[in-house]
Image (cartoon, rainbow, N blue to C red; front, side):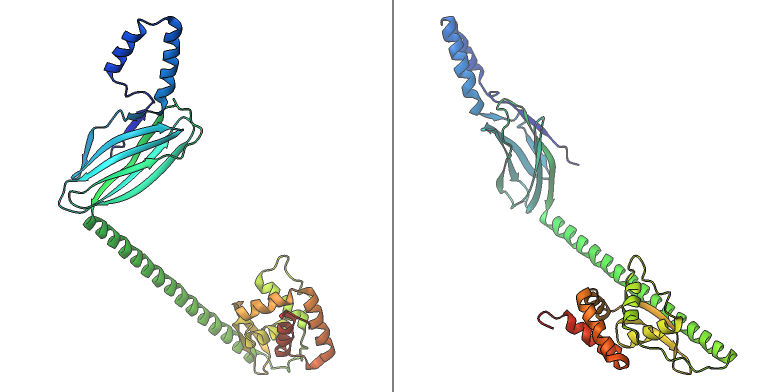
Length: 325
């Protein structure tokens, strides 16, 4: 495709043969100390002169002529110019990339140009190098030289957009399929759980469920456990019916996304849990504040058996509000 070209240059490479022969003629008639002085001053002046690239021939790429012009070396900076002439009857897009480098550092530059038919433009690239020795060799490498018509660029853009839309549609379809399968799996699990509870109820007499006392600390511990807190909260002191009862309350209150399976006596026999809801995460974030939670539990103790989950949510929400409590 594109053959990168290298241009190496040093100060003083553009001195003409006529100038060199003249200097030899003059130096032959001067005393030695004057010759040394002349050579010293001569060497001091060449470092700021403009020099041409060693390769300034014209390159032809798809109807566009490229000619490298001048590389200037002054105050440690390098400037590379390239002339582009569109000799086609179409608008052409030219992408150019350059790399300036020496033995220590390198710097990359990229530009894009639109050339109308018969239009000529000059690309000028100046390095940002500093503190480079004036006589150091600097290399300018063309890393990208791509020529396309505007029509081709438009077609490529259209193809990229169509590909992005296809990928987006495929991702949406895959996400929908996963969600649908998850929903179906959830329904199957719920049906199996309900069937298991029904069979268990048929095989043994229904005993009246023991009343479960509402426990604000159990609510917080269950939410922390579902969030995945490490280390896991210690729930060994709570019975399975008590935990199922509180899970059922939190599902009904919208703190947890899930479902509760209840028996004939209204007790929660088992639960299916998905995740914390946003309301549940907000509740838990406020409950983490120890000073606020201490006030909530104190108020819950005072209210005793009158305490409900709805009331607990109200107390926690009030504790999270700024200002005096």
